[in-house]
Length: 504
Ligand code: GLN
Image 1 (cartoon, rainbow, N blue to C red):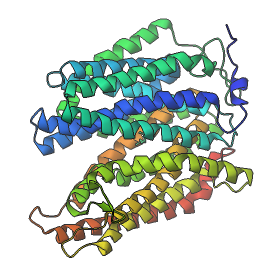
Image 2: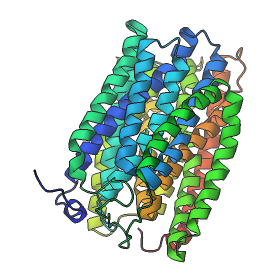
Image 3: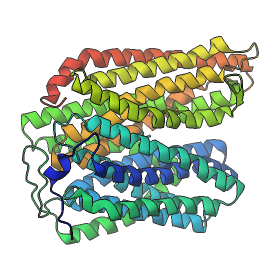
Image 4: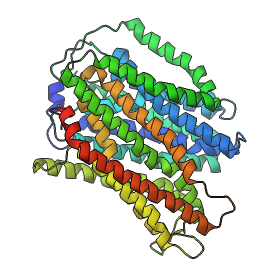
């Protein structure tokens, strides 16, 4: 049997990417296929099969999204304290498979039960695979952001194919088959992980395992997790399922949950911070700054699922470059993933090339750039009004360009955010901080809904031209807010850099 790789052997890899990155890439790709496949079916299924009203289905959809990302904090917490990243990922994968299996058997009858399994499962899977990517790199390795960029294209390949395939199968063949497909790809994800995890050496083992992971400051991890703790987490997460079923079904509960979870997690992180020295505390505060800004980013970005899809449905033509006919909502749903797949590896290579020349912007500047691109994109969404017919039908080409620009913004912020969480957090808090990063997405989704509702204030009886004006006015506002946020970030960048200490 080949000897287990040591952390040094893994982190001293040659070339641009460590080989383990590819294994995690494929596991995550299939997991995102399952996740986005399901996500793409939820609202449609609720309206057409469960006979819910549009508004109710939208609220319920929002609740599942909020919960799914809120649970990443809990998944990260238990990974840090008890399970380790690998076991968490495995358990999360199993729960996701069970959830999809239940939905495949009888989606109408067991809808909320299946969804709740998936919510808890994603919480255990999603943050922890991202943290393991970070562990493949030495503290100062300049190739880390590039690694996360590549990993990010895996995410989007899964999202793109899953998002298309599942709903198409559901609509045209059978919902059982569509949910079943999500389960099958999740099995592939888990098999990929199980068969390749040996290559991760000590990465992701439970805290305090024989082999100590020396990633940062030679921190030796104390072993205080007992075997029964593991079973307690497994059983505890199962007990949560009926509770989540109730909370997702009654969306006011989700509101209360969202009001409570953010402040509570903050308190918890402050408590954990008190155990660390000043340097580590400053880094964690810097991580919180990034997390808070990311809430704003996602609140704007996630207009794609809300106001931008209504805008696409009402106010866009269906011709690209005057020749190809495409459904504008199809473009709205897929342009971003497609552009991420094309440009994420390129961005990664640009970061590496810039690092070699010592001109790579630091993370705060990259975040600032992310907001400037976001502002640019919303300005282009606004500018669609200058490329519109007299009846209020705007150019799909210009709309697609806006998606290109917003994707550039995402690539400056989202993979970089994953990367910086792994750099700024002490080993024992990496899962929790990654969970907080995704918790920001939960809040982003939440605020996106509020912003979208404000933007969609156009009257149903308005003409298309009036609707075009209302929406694009809103996008111009968002462009201005994004620009201001970007400028604020660039202005405070020296301060945040100071907090980050030796982390770039
Ligand atoms: N699209 C990315 C993913 O699925 C980012 C999600 C998020 O953080 N909101 O991982």
